[in-house]
Length: 128
Length: 177
Image 1: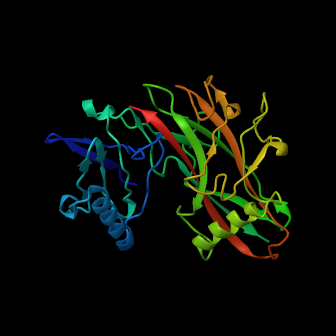
Image 2 (image 1 turned 90 degrees about the horizontal axis):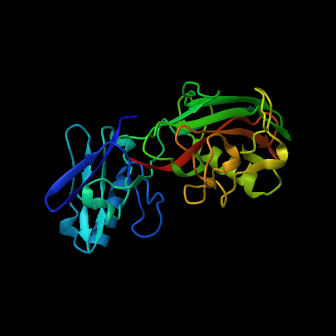
């Protein structure tokens, strides 16, 4: 699977990481949401961002030529919502991140990864 | 720095293939078990919040007919609460010898509430960490390694000759970079 990138912006600066950072908008470090990139999930992501941003115009997105899917992050009070982009749109997952505190240096304290080749094992068996 | 997880079939080994064949099993019997050794390459701090959950099979070489149905079926076996289903065992013997199955009394059957979804994972138990000294469940220390086993217990209710089934196990974790 191609590496994923998490990007967010603050005060005009943009930070990009090649790991999957995730945090529920509130609460402990847990996976927030993960959706494969289908038409349905794209719609869901957009709708969600519009909802949390309370401003549809501030939740733009784009699908670049190399299939990097970008959802611009949204700031609401002290909460930041990250965008997750993938070099393979079939592997897109999305998370939100509350950057309060740890975002200051541009490096969040912890990551919560999505299922990847590294932390996933498939099992097959035959019932005879 | 990205923190990577390495899951291997022997301690310190190379990454396991993305799909494991657990072999054949009759109804009311078990598949073979698979050893899973789990380590990471973090160099800043231990990884934490380690937990397992079952999901739909997305790995290569799928032999069944409907991966969604497989996931639902196997999860349903666990929810029946008869001791069948996808088994995670986090209780390695000390010492453990290759080929030795962990005590069945420590089997954890994956259920909807208990390993069946990303929102209800089975926390990695400190008892499964065989290298390193974790402070709490869910932690694999720096240079540490966990050892679990997985297998399937096929219930009697499944028709003989039902064919291939497949599911996937994911380990979620948090890492400091």
